Amino acid sequence: WPFPPGSSVSHLLFGYSGVVKSRDTKPRYDVTGWDGLREVEGANDKPFYTVLTEKGWRYVVEENLVPGGKDGDGGRLEGDGWLGADEGVFR
Image (tube, rainbow, N blue to C red; front, top):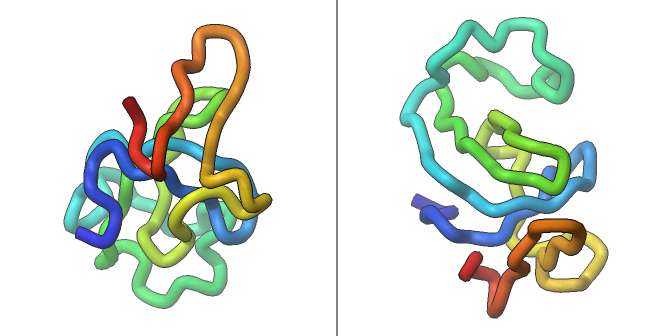
């Protein structure tokens, strides 16, 4: 896996950061027509990740994820109840 559980990631298109919980080799749902997947060819056959963000859980295709935070903060998330990240892995 490029992003094992605990990895700090950001969404390539939408910019939010999060921490990987799990990976599915193919999506558990029909993702045809989902926002962010219009440019992803064959999305229903690609790996998807469950990602915890400050605003809740997101289900994201692998090619829309990049390591760490896009804003250069190493993917650290802050806010009420958030424990943070250290060296790109959630602790």
